[in-house]
Amino acid sequence: MDRRSPLGEFLMARRARLGPDDVGLPRYGDRRRVPGLRREELAMLAGVSAGYYTRLEQGQSLNASAEVLDAIATALHLTTAEREHLHVLSTTTRHRTGPAAPPEEHASADLRTLLAAMGHVPALVAGRRNDVLAWNRAGHALLAGHVALAAPDEPVTRPNLSRLVFLDAHTRALYGDWPAKARAVVGNLRVLTARNPEDACLAALVGELAIQSPEFAALWAEHTVEPCGRDVYDLAHPVVGDLTVTQQTFHVPREPHQSLVAFTTEPASASSAALSVLQQACGIGKGAGPNP
Image 1 (tube, rainbow, N blue to C red):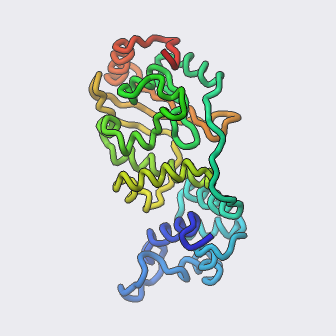
Image 2 (cartoon, helix red, strand yellow):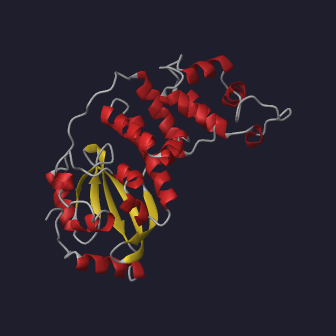
Image 3 (cartoon, rainbow, N blue to C red):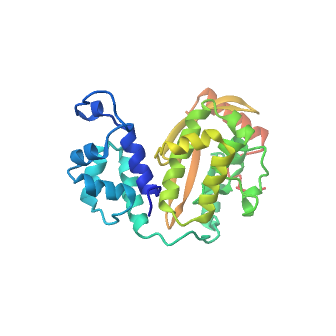
């Protein structure tokens, strides 16, 4: 591992985010050669030697204990998600074997049955790279009606949720607060890349987005970490107009790299009425399946 390894980059980014005033240290004047805390300051706060922390940040030490990582996380004021990310990066760094193409992904028959049973609830199954492995008619109509309904059925045509947000004009126009959605996508993509460091296709996706989207490149450099959970988004839908949806992401049992993503609206709200109109416009009813 070198200085620009994921672990080293994350530590440097988070150290640069904090200043002496944030952690109760004297500033000793304003002429500081580095943004944020110095390495020796962070090491002192974490209770480790400056030399050890430097070796860890530069990749010369690969065996940091969980206790040391927790001490560093506390010194850096990491969130719960960032703390977990630090541990994941440390573990995957020690076991890196080189890029490889992972097995092809598919949504199981059980997941497709579940999507069909959800019917009028917009939902999809996302894979390890945020590819849409399957969606029901409601999910397709809500998020990407301009994309072929059957697109997820073949790996070469599958929509990728990250790519749609940054490179697709229709998806960009869909989100009322696109910057918030973009930041959430990048935060989750950081989690995915840490968990799948050998996935050559995932690395290629990050490279593609960084080259084609300056906004993605800027957000990626911030090392934001935030796994998908529950988010509320205002949508400007091209068919039914404005509505607010709650997005919830659930891990799929026995498929650790897949997630079920569902979208709901407040009962008896204008958004709920708009979603009903969309369902009617697309011929969606309860029990409508994921495919035509």
